[in-house]
Amino acid sequence: MKKRAPTEKISNSRGKYLLFYIGILLVISGLTIGAHIYISRSHTSPSTSASTDNSDCPSAFTVVRENDKELINRLYLVEIETESSKYTELKLELCKRILQYKDKGTVETASVYCRNLNDGSWMGIDGERCYLPGSLMKVPIMIYYLKKEQEHKGTLKKELLYEKPKQSFPSQVFKGDSILSGKKYQIVDLLRYMIVESDNNATHLLSENLENGSFNKLFTDLEIPPDNINDVNYQINAKEYSKFMLVLYNATYLYRNLSEQALELLAKSKFHDGISKTLPPGIIVAHKFGECGRDKDMTFSESGIIYLKNSPYLLTIMTKGSMIKDQTDLVSEISADVFHFMSN
Image (tube, rainbow, N blue to C red; front, side, top):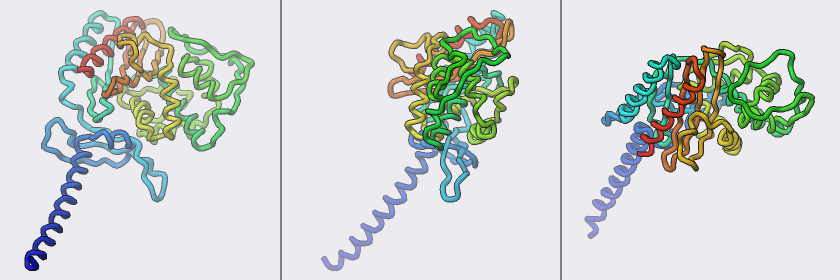
């Protein structure tokens, strides 16, 4: 028995080392296949790649980080660089639907970005094409003020006086309640008007009181081309815009309670003619729409997180055309197709 003791000790030691190396391999594999834990905790800057034998797994992904602190490097986003082949059938179906509207002559272009929020897999259709965002830019304005609340507690309680400007705002096809001239409003209430009602008056007041440099930093932090708040010609594509929704869902840019506050406002949106129109009752959708243009040169876009049970996903659709009704109908039909695919 005494002679066997050293042998047993060496065997146990080898077993520990073996378990250690297996653990390391599992961690690397988890990152490579886009496991939910890394998707829900990430941001970007340097580019990193990893290989895997599974053809449906990402071969490379980009990481976006804060890079503002000396000892930490906060993770904002992880982007898988190649779209997943599992969406091939869905992509073909959506392309056919878009073509039907193009043939009618009422839709000129349409772009789609869809992302599974559990594993980070995604698909895109003409996702690099840029559009005038319209009211979609109300989401980064909201994120800006929530970030200010994070840095300076009490910001949301600050009151702002609204005085109706002399210049008129672009006309809105879809609009809700609005703030009144001559009244003071807390910023937290202005955010509700801006997101839930899509009120341009509240948006104007909030825009007039933000710092453009800090607002631009929100964009550069997420590696999105920066927007000057007064630039009416600013354009963005579906994939870039989706980053705003992703950092809210993952709570990687704002504190968790502030991200939750933002998504609760988006889930209360009174607009129901787009993504949410064709979804079953009871499905929560945190979304924002945007329209821009007039007459026969209109852009209509919408981005939302659809809380499908056990399989939430992000969907951003951008369109340009001559008939806003057909554009919103196309968005609704695309949403229905994607929901059906994701449900199965």
